[in-house]
Length: 356
Image (cartoon, rainbow, N blue to C red; front, side, top):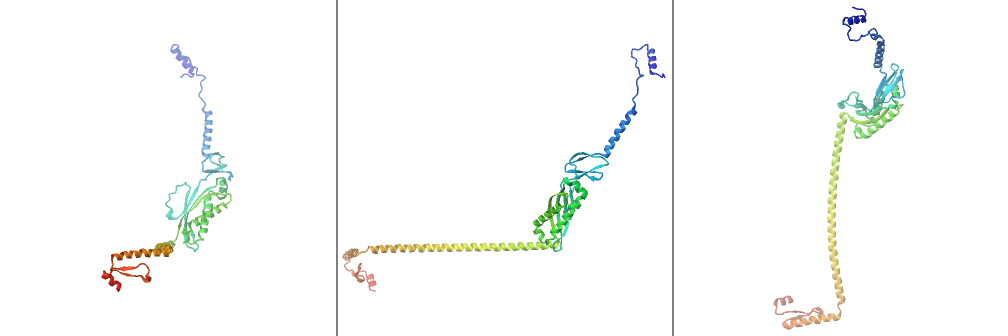
């Protein structure tokens, strides 16, 4: 085997009678030195590995803030939503939720609600309290709140990441016990709105007293008041008695209204009769007054000459009658005044009646 490639190709060319293919000089050809690139590749691999393991950046979503600590000391300014770098192994960024969260203090009867992990809804045992007489009562409360994002580093530094159990839970339980203890168990359902307002105001006041305003309270809702069975039975009996009393009162009031209605109708009828009688009396009086006035006017018009004339006219009528009935008898009225009365003597009935 030839030691030099050029000699090998030259011999082949001579043996092939000077072929037309050109001569190739491989004396300058060298294989690449992979040792020079291996160092660069290893360096890139190490850098990428460090980035993946150390992860010197963080992405903060909306509704969250980042709390950066340098050598264990919290930075007072929170990191808002976005992309942030930090120095690995020296600095650390902890992400905390600032969205509205909810705690349900509920009895075993209300634990049927399904709570998704990470939903911001937490379920705790109902709040057991004592009324003003020492009777046990349970209160189901719902509290909605959120971490104050501006003061989140100070809150975490003071209370730790379990700040909810140290701030919200003790305040809510203490306030509910304090407010409820002022009332009897029977009063709680009747004064529910008053008690709910008092609990809300007291919780807000206690939360606002905390330094750096760590929490923003959204709402406090009184969901249910769970009374002892005996108290519930007693309240039900009282309610039934009140309903019966209200029904009796309604019936009495209705009877009174009916009586007043009948009395009003009777009074109205009596007034109508009275008005009708008064109208008739007034009519009779008016008629009598008219007749009297007429008689008075007639009396004023009667004179001696007029009476003499009337007497002559009547006497003439009698005279004419006597001409027709000559057997008649003439009877004068007392005093001989006009008119004269005559009777037919041929009528026996009239004659006997006159004589009697």
